[in-house]
Amino acid sequence: MEKIFDITLQNRKRLQQFLTETSKEQLFKIPEGHRNNIWWNIAHVVVTQQLLVYKFSNLPMQLDDEIIGKYKKGTAPEGIPSDVEIKLINDCLISTVNQLQEDYKNGVFKEFNSYTTSANVTLSSVEDAIAFNAFHEGIHLGTILSLKKH
Image (cartoon, rainbow, N blue to C red; front, top):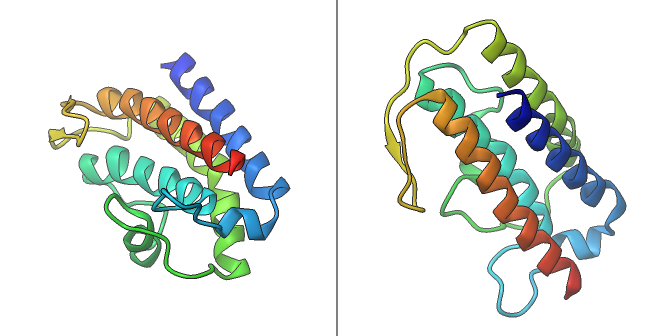
């Protein structure tokens, strides 16, 4: 599991770099042919990790319901987020990975509700969810790289 945590952390550092080094205009722009923007993809991966790992383990998530509702699967960007919201997601990019690693090490995950993803992958354990999350985040990194080219 250590390697998966490291992969996720390295990906999150890259996402944080995009968030802090990309102009707000480019962060929030939805290019023709796309349905979301760089910002949404970054916020979405933070939210999705919480849903896949904590919600399906019947544990409290580290984000409030409003943020979860705005960036979960099936949503699309809605206007420009506040500076407070941007800072929250920026802070959570690294802290949620560190917290997950600590929680996993401390044996916090006792149960898991099986879930089949939209990629038709059935997750039956927290380890499955953590592994799938790394895959999911890689997809969104690819999307961000494509959005940066527009």
